[in-house]
Length: 101
Image (cartoon, rainbow, N blue to C red; front, side, top):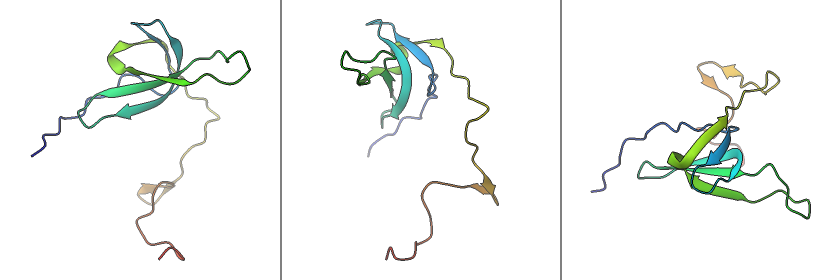
C-alpha cells in the first residue's frame, strides 16, 4: 500500500517575482507542480529575452529554495469567474457532451 503524505501549502504564488537562493536565478513564477510525495516544484521564467528575441526557457526549482522578491498583485481588470448556482463556470464537465459519445 502506498502512503500519501498530506499536501503542504505552497508559499509561492503564480506571478510572484522570485530568486533562487542556490543559483541566484531571478524571474516570474509561471507554474507550480505538486508531486505525489508532497513536494512542490516551481517553474520560473526570466524577464530577460534570449539574444535572438525569443523568451527564455522555464527553469524548475524546489519551492524551499525560492525567495519571494515581489508578491504578485492581481490586476483589477483580471477576468472574474462567474458563479452559476453553487458552482463556478469553466473546467471539466460532469455530464456527457452532445456528439462526444
